[in-house]
Image 1 (cartoon, rainbow, N blue to C red):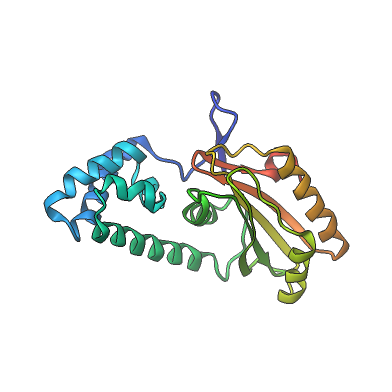
Image 2: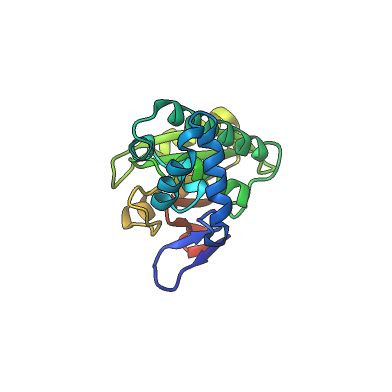
Length: 222
């Protein structure tokens, strides 16, 4: 589910930082850093919190952004990478063998951990069976910092290969704002038209960004 900030055109999801949990975020960062650098755990955790604002944002951030604040400490960065990998695997595991809904908080958390901080746009497709269970999760389009394109034909070919009856489209905006562009809407319409010819349902298209998530279905674009 998304919440709208009245002073910002972007939608904001519940995975965004919670200012009320600042002490807990600082402690979690300090504990994680303390696994390899207990002597600097407090100092480095304060740097990361000041830059990213929450534990989740610090873990999800790109290595290049984080390691500079860690004074190029490879050991600490490896700890963050391993933790993020384990967290992503855990979140993905929670999505298996259960119906996938585009406003499911576990789904939003998984997508945010995978895509929100990527430096270039990617189009991810979640392939679903008749029970809306996840049977495939693939990146089928990689673009630039400001755009992405994927072939509707290739997406539908993968639907046939996997026996999918529905799909959920997801892509990220490196700019941080999740507001759809005109090109985003055009591509979604092309994919939806192609999918309808094969009786494949496009459940939603989600745009994931650092500052929130926008649902095409909720916004009335699908």
